[in-house]
Amino acid sequence: MTARIIDGKAVAKKLRGEYQARVRRLMAGHALQPGLAVILVGSNPASRLYVSNKVRACEEIGIRSERIELPADIAEEALLAQIDRLNADPTVHGILVQLPLPPHIAMRRVLERISADKDVDGFHLYNVGGLMTGTTVFPPCTPYGVQKLLEHERVEIAGRNVVVVGASNIVGKPTAMMLMQQDATVCICHKLTRDLAIFTLLADILVVAAGVPNLIVPQMVRTGAVVIDVGINRLPDGRIVGDVDFEGVREKAALITPVPGGVGPMTVTMLLYNTLRSAERSVGVVDDHAPWENV
Ligand code: NAD
Image (cartoon, rainbow, N blue to C red; front, side, top):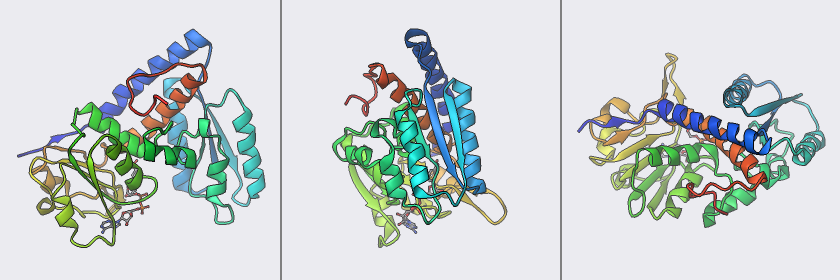
């Protein structure tokens, strides 16, 4: 069996086109332009690049973006004051603080200060808690991207065995919770899991987010499985690879995401979507088609 490759770039492009049309409708029908504020503390080059990508993606679909750059030694209170200002600004529908933050700033205090109604990264405890009950307003962007890819490929989730490798707060755990809410049987593995293959072989849908190149080899994958590789790893020779031995596993799986070009492009796409949804919610527009939004 040779897997069909899930083209995350193409799915992201299609979705961004749909979201752009929705932005136009919102502007025409409600004179409302969605707005995203992105706060960058310090000058970490990777963070700077991520922020630039997010700002550019906003512009491409008509979301207004505000980039706020603050010095690395900013006092926590001053950062919180910026968030208070953005919380109160009706032209801002999403607030994102680029992580990581400098060590003298308490990340949780900062994330909790963002209004839950503008928490488009989905990191506020209110939205994290909502993942447990299936009522989160803003699912975190990478797990939401995985969800959208599965939806796009019409992968059945209810009753299937899902194994998530990786238990982080931003990828592994929320992905597992979202799929469990859709009646999958879910198992979460992590770096202390013994005999990882025993678990991965049970998976109809295998989601891997460990940050370890070649962690998943063909012998660990059930024939016909759907394999979603969230990992992004830079090899010493400069190549970017995921956590899955793509060429090997491709011969066994039914569907597989490549790296790059799989989950990666979906993450920013879902940030755009959460920001759009926040603006739509502010004027009472409801999307009946999305399982996470009817709260
Ligand atoms: P993390 O380091 O916070 O968490 C890694 C998780 O994997 C941990 O739970 C750890 O226990 C587990 N793990 C590590 N080694 C393992 C092993 N040998 N076997 C089983 N489990 C193991 O990382 P993260 O932030 O969750 O990111 C995971 C990967 O996904 C990274 O490669 C990261 O770059 C990538 N990522 C991609 C996107 C995207 O947009 N595609 C977004 C976020 C993260």
